[in-house]
Image 1 (tube, rainbow, N blue to C red):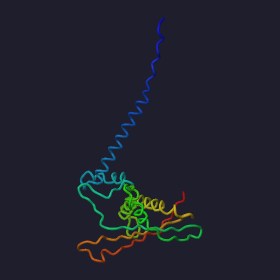
Image 2: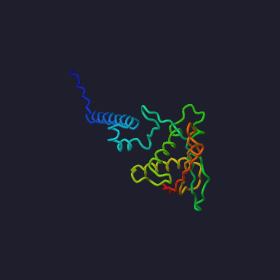
Image 3: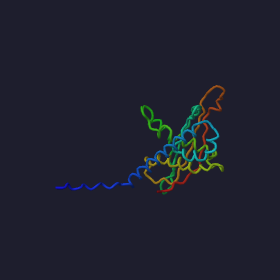
Amino acid sequence: MTEQAIPRRPTRHWSRALVGVTVLVTLALVGCQMAASFLYNAPANVISKAYAAQVSWWMTPLQMQNWQLFAPNPISENVEVDARASVGPSAAVTSWVNLSAIDEAQTDGDPAPSHLTMNAMRNAWIKFIQTHTSTGIPLANSPLAGTAQGYLENLVLTYLRPHESQTIDSIQVRFVTTLLSGEGRTAAQTAPQTAMMPWWPVTQS
């Protein structure tokens, strides 16, 4: 009696190719992330200047970092971000809400605070003032002004919407910046400085 031949399992060449492509794409993305992070934080050099636009597009605003390689960038001022909203059919204006205080309350006593509560609002403020005037007008030479403002608006809405039952039609933000006291700084220099932004309409989704 002859043994019946066991049919060979067909080779799935397409699955191997898919795995290979997936691995290559993943490695490429990891490489891009590492290179962009290094160039973003490293001191200015020929390469970082040549690819400044591409690095900025990749890193901002979601991956902004408040430090630099070989040159720490310590915080020299306290920033308070406040917001209020125009709500409902009567366009009633709410009281100012201290968003920075909300973050501080969530961070205080937390052994492992999240990146969102620690840095998101401050990073949004940094990118906004880098791309706008003190009155909230986008700088003409800043292609990322719209992105920075949109990111700040969306972040502010995540704070306001859970506490507001009516529809938010527009929001207004103000920044209260206080320079930390130090040698050579006068009382006038360390007095709180308030920058009021215009009302921004909210697109209803």
